[in-house]
Image 1 (cartoon, rainbow, N blue to C red):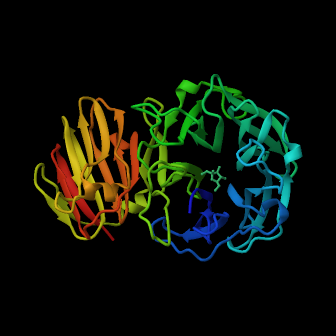
Image 2: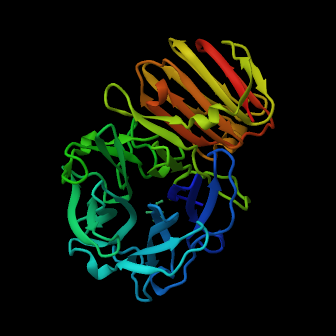
Image 3: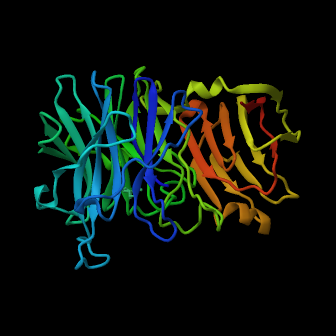
Length: 443
Ligand code: FRU
């Protein structure tokens, strides 16, 4: 699986669709998988929801969104259908046809007839064939809007903003462009509207990794839209903020649930990486992050916190004292360090098992690192470290769930997500931070 798709809630039920290749690894053709939940913690995965079935999506049902239709209990999904023509030149900019397709469902599972609402000939001349990942919503006046990620023929990542009266007949309204180059392609555009401020989420491809930023192969972050999504045509590339600094995070989607919360879910993985995100031989690869509630801090930055539904699952609190080893039964835990003073390190795994993953604050740098050694490198799958500037830590929360680790620092201003494949069956922990430490089991 890869990107989350069609995140939505209808009559109390959350629907999380996702990019899903049922015949992987033999065949990588994408469908939409489907998971449902009423509490964002326990999930069922009924069956795949959308599969290739028309000429326009013969080579993949790519990413998109879902819009609940008011009063009707129905969900309308928008996605990109991909078709690779027989004569496509591999690795050229024009390697496929991308159409935007609409389907509706009454039960979240069975979708009716596919309608192609935008075809390659509808796009403006300046964009190449990379046009995908529709994000659709209706404004207060009932006007429909669509964001599409694109790559121009000059290799610039940009977003197109389309409008429509009925969500079917679309007209290009404007482009949102960076004031200077921010990658050659912007995938998975999305929108967060928080306290009257609009933020454009994009996944730029082609940024050069640096020591303290953009360390993954492709990036995922957001840009403030000073004049809002309807007016802003140029964003400041230097304002780009990464959502997450871990090894495994990409293609997040944002949606507003029925209680009005703005939630974000990312794909806990990336593609085309130099390292692997899963041991060989698994029949199933990748996962989604926890759902995270978004809000703004006093400086106008977006903070991310796991949804409170998870807090309700905490059981059996135990102290995590500085310098003392702690073993938690199983590989599921929710851990908090409050009132942190000074520098320190939190280590998961054991020396004996050799699968150490550490989070360290030292010299104004915060690092998530897989430690060296043969066994550690097996758990690391070729990864080393991710480091960002950080002048101090006040608090930390880590949620470990089998092979996933999410780190929320300083109230959720800084997040790291990674897959981790420890050797042991229990979770060994050791912290050197002077802090109030508590470890919970999660029911
Ligand atoms: C992002 C992405 C999307 C595309 C999908 C295909 O990870 O490349 O742009 O729709 O994956 O699976």
